[in-house]
Image (tube, rainbow, N blue to C red; front, top):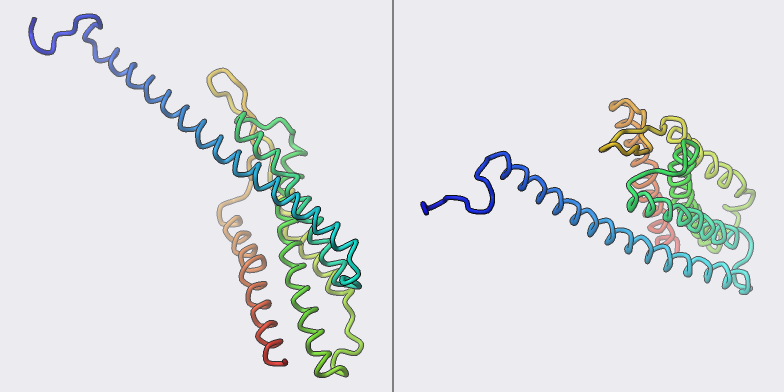
Length: 227
């Protein structure tokens, strides 16, 4: 028998290519399953730990007499916002595993909007809590400087800004279907133009990360100098 001659499988380039493609598809499917399972486990553990932590916070805050007034409201709202955000994780995990979206067009809009809304609300609440802490520190040293300052406008601004920043996500998204190997798949798809989306991401970065970070840093430096 000559070297390189095939015995059981016909020597045909197409057969070899088909076998290689099938092997590659199996490896890709296995890799996808492993990555999806890993991400699903991480998200499930995060949801469990964070849910327990936020419920514990709500119980402690409501039973303790230490937290009163606006600080009580902020901590409760922060915990509730986190719990609301965590409620979206099962939908994300389900989509990872089944690679399909079962919750309709309304589900797309509500889930993506809720994601941004709760995230911004949490960040803005932390920023306002920092301003409250700074105001309390200034009030100790200069009590007359803080007379007449209302907290209501801060809460109103927080709600309004969070909603306005999340609202475009609710509008500019829809549910699209595709045919994958004879199986209909549904996925949420943004309808943004690329340039508009870049501007929106820039606004989100500045309002969600950069500006709150600078404000909180400035407030605590001011508080340290005041003390």
